[in-house]
Length: 294
Image (tube, rainbow, N blue to C red):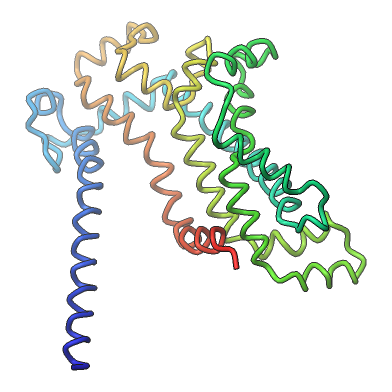
């Protein structure tokens, strides 16, 4: 009986691994195909002969993209947005989650504040009022138009405050007995113990800022201020050729539009693909601890 259960368990685990491997492969196939197209000759790409392996291997598409001023400018805008946005998001998330993690007796009107945050998850002012607010505050065509509307991700605040609640209260009491105030306790006790959750929320913030494209199209009047994803959207969906110089047009005659676009898409994915493996070890641990309240 025990051997039968052990065999059934092994079969169940093996089936899970097989199913997850198939799903992983299905997710990777489009990325591999785009990478193969970007490394293929223009004739093979235009003829649809490229599958999962490059045909007539060449680096010309990447050489063209890395010399393209508009692509590099949008790449720098995205890097600026991610770096500033990450610091802004995590600072406000921590400062909001810490007081909201206290009991009502320690923080008066704590419940009212918590409901105020929750309501912002359910309702928003709408696209037009948000645009008018950004315009009337003079933020249009600046990096702050992309950062301020997403400065406080409420879902991340909820996750982190639940994580804070799971930490032993005795640690905070010991810090108070040693003469520490709330801010010092937060910086020297809560934050070091919450690194798994903070790393997970940092990954959320990075991915959100890097992948956002719609707000760039709305709030940026000048194409040179577009973040990378907004630039790719105008290039691929709208076929915007207004920023293409005469020299680039001559080079495009030797290249394929498909190979160039594939190279730009793959380069846009590369930073997140490189970052995620280093953050993955915190991902599941941080989400589980941040979402369970005892």
